[in-house]
Image 1 (cartoon, rainbow, N blue to C red):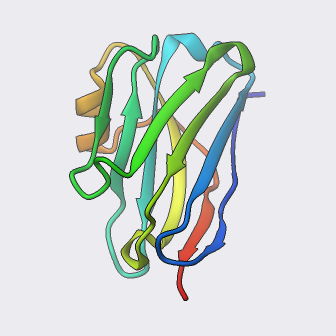
Image 2 (tube, helix red, strand yellow):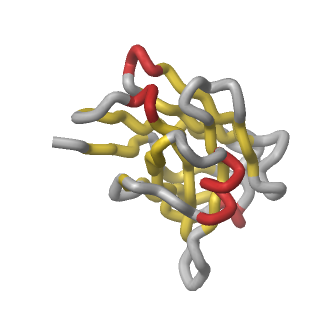
Amino acid sequence: QLQLAESGGGLVQPGGSLRLSCTFSGFTLRYYHIGWFRQAPGKEREGVSCISSTGESTNYADSVKGRFTISRDNAKDTVYLQMNSLKPEDTAVYYCAAEPRITTVQDMCVSGRGEYWGKGTLVTVSS
């Protein structure tokens, strides 16, 4: 059974850090690009960061460049999103998604394309 499961969300103060993890089961991770997306209350879902199947290519939203880092460990079937210098506007439900590697990571992030999705983890940045 194919599953994606996000973890690592929580409440953090502005300027703090969190590391989100997305674990996969039921399919071969190395054949997929992986993306992190988020949806804040009252807003549309947006692409945060995406990483290619090999890990060689990444894409970041302008709003998180220099603060967030995406990485993957195919051997552990896990993708990470390290989030530093968090801001209140980063508050959202964060989702991971997997997309077959026939597309580009940029296209995946911009279009919000994902064949498989997790259920999300809530990140709240507040003092």
